[in-house]
Length: 117
Length: 111
Image (cartoon, rainbow over all chains, first blue to last red; front, side):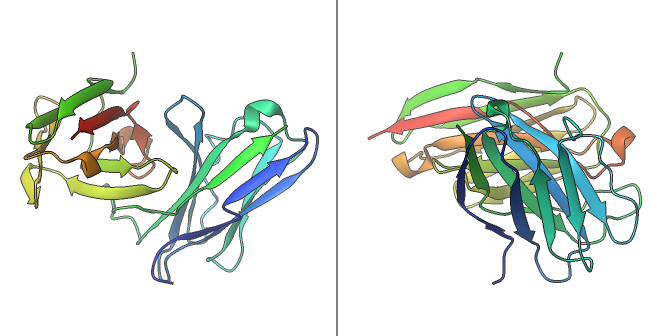
């Protein structure tokens, strides 16, 4: 498709289980971002991939969260030993190569709604 | 204090009214993003702007970089405009790419 896609759209899991969330960025976009929107909260940054550079993981809330990006395209966000506070909508976005010192528009996927029981 | 503040947090208006949503930020930026989020969670980009004013249909966005302030206006509002509107900025000090978001303004337009 032409836009950012995410799967699954909804995920219900039990506390303590691991989950994987997938993001397919727009073709040709080398920058990929993960954000989280907890219930009643605003959006917050999690992690950012740009090309072959080391990812910016400064927003990951704990070491239970990790992400990888294979082949510079698809990304997987993994949450280990899920907790109820991990329940949120996880959004992925992608953009073209960021301009030095500037900003390139990000395009958002539809999100994955994660519910931890 | 949040780096991005929006006002109002909630806004209810009648169809046809002129709507203004404000965004103030405290960090240096090169651009600002206005986003729309409908029930169900999907986010759509409305505007990206770095100076002046942009217009798409009934939507107008303005920014004053010196005053660190942006506004989103909706003319002739319609119930389908009901959504959460989010202001987002990429702070230069954080690399000018990852976004910091306002808390959002929940807009309800009644017929």
